[in-house]
Length: 88
Image 1: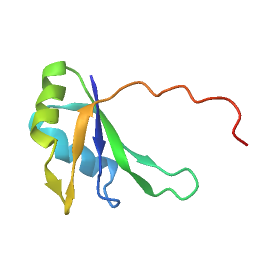
Image 2 (image 1 turned 60 degrees about the horizontal axis):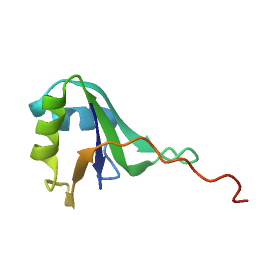
Image 3 (image 1 turned 90 degrees about the horizontal axis):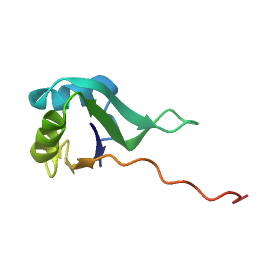
């Protein structure tokens, strides 16, 4: 099960994100979303756990938690919405 973590500190790295969720279970993957052009954090990331129990424990334990002065928003990740064609 994959979870979304929003409002992450801009300095957070993938290993730090992994360390943040370790108390709740072993993460299969932990990645901070980065801007393609600059490589800087977009302020959110995703963590995938092997079990729903671990993921739900992380959601309950981290949602609303303050990290480096930022209050995290954590919930179950949803598939990306289809973007409409065109735009430019």
